Image (cartoon, rainbow, N blue to C red):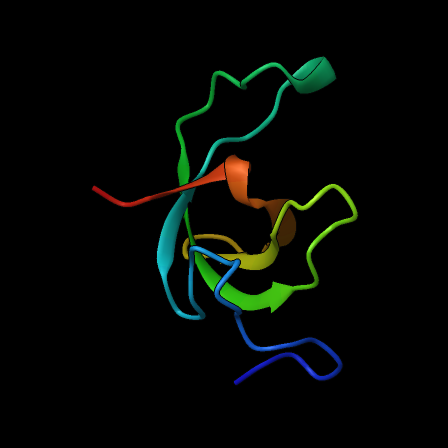
Length: 78
């Protein structure tokens, strides 16, 4: 199910709704944080940014947290 007002994942998106992904938390000024990567589920695909980067809304599997991230901030499990 797509988020109202946002498209279903397109061919430009490499992840689909309900895919489980790792998210690397960002430290100060974009440096990678020291915390381990967290597991999130893709809940919606958002419009592609002006610079061509696909965006996603992801939800944590362990905390009550949702984030909007670009594709380079997430990776496949495994």
